[in-house]
Length: 307
Image (cartoon, rainbow, N blue to C red; front, side, top):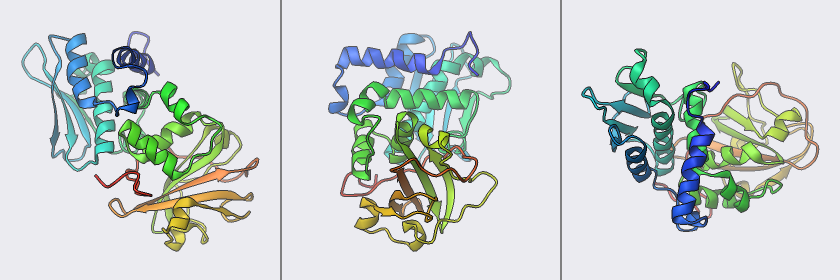
């Protein structure tokens, strides 16, 4: 829970969004995504001129994907570091996450002895987005900053059921990974949908939209092994154009009701991503959902090349 005297993630992200809309225009995403690296340097100098972020750079970070660190000398000088082995979309979210820590938590990180000259964020807290407390707040900040809902909703109305081509265009618009884009859409869509990330016939994690979750449409992955249905594209190793476009799967393949299934594979990350759309009321089975890993990469119809 956010403490009353600590900046709130959505409020702070909205403040920056409104500033950027005013300076660059409400159509700024038509010209390209946020340069989050430059934003971190310039915005930190505005709000904390005696202790800004002076560097955003790649490092070989053992055991973590990003970090916000500060200097020994006072006044503090801060730096955002990100692991070198990241795609541009994942890198943007990592920088946004660490900027969130700076905006929201820099005083806590500097004053609390639990932090040793900074905060080091592992894959679980950034890539998997399974963090709690300040890690969850940094994720909320990054998602709201990089993919503002007022623009996202205009591009993809809440009642629409997108395909990978549409979602891929949005990922390119905001400069983030496809999975970050799908997760953002799942936050507000009025449709029932599930994203499943898998490998070798088993689900690593799954995420349902709010309406799907409320209707009981979710997949158990926490402390459980979920084997993909034999007829699922990923289970059959079918990553053809037909799989990317999708097809209606009959009842009792995934759930008691029919679902529309789309799937593609990332060889780079050795994983598949499946998107299920429920066209009716949907099933009511499967128990407990797990917060997802952030799975990068979308290659379909030339929308997002490998980076």
